Length: 95
Image (cartoon, rainbow, N blue to C red; front, side, top):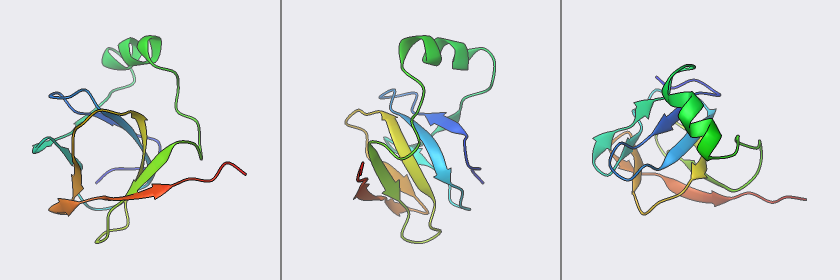
């Protein structure tokens, strides 16, 4: 189960997401379970290559079953899934 604030990435396409609202579903991208980024090691590589996530910016994806919401930090062509189905995109207004 993903928790708010955790960062996940896809080992295939390198897409990176941050959990905005946790849920019981498993985050999947490119047909494979996404990897949780730890506080040390890989996280230092990602934070040096990509800016830190900004709350309430960009695009959110929501799971229609468990309600898990993620913020895409580094977008690629990978397809995001949760609870066995494609996640729905939600545009976030900045005003």
